[in-house]
Image (cartoon, rainbow, N blue to C red; front, side):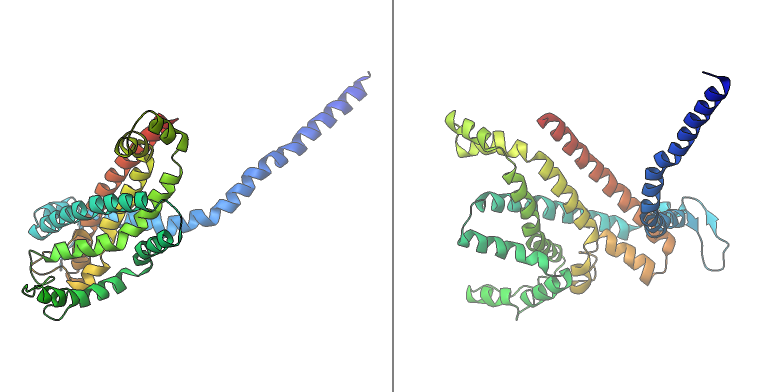
Length: 311
């Protein structure tokens, strides 16, 4: 082969290589262009507001004063008795809604696994509250809880019991809000448990039945462990609802009476909108989100361990 032929062949190979390089990069460029709109929306409407709230929590300003930076908002926050009361209420609200809602949802899912018109009707009745806006549900329960004239007091009167101010009594108001939340969310959580129960291998249940295990032992040793990832996932959703659902409190009690139903999200609203204290509201938001992220991370790690164990 002559030198000219060698150079020609090398140029051809080199030209093919350079021609192929853009083709290899095109899928990456296409992916970047497709992701760019979503990335811009996330940056503008998610990450940038989060950074603004985080910065506002460290910005200290007052009337006629030059703004400064520091942890003063956090010190004021943890010294505020209203915040501590709202945090305690939120903890009671979480304990009173998450665990009962999950237990009832799992119980209903176990009882409504089969098929049939009657079971379908019961499922529909339990799921129906999730389609109602929380404001509408609160308005419905306002009629039920109406002192002296509400439907609950009407039937209590038939039983010879005195009328009760369910939303005006500080000892009963938070319990009434908890009851509304359980009624609203139980059917929604039940759908996840029905899906989880459908994924439990029937051969495991049949093997346990052949070994002489009763219904309770089959549930405790087969069904319940297999539902671990579902329970962890639903628990995360329930904790999100605990910190984000505040519509019924706004409609029914507005945090009262005597701060008995004031929770963290409504406290943040009060500081930002009513007291115009953006620094304190931002600090409360950061603390609330940090607690929520910690609890969610713990639940997601539990899901990962359960999935690893199953695999």
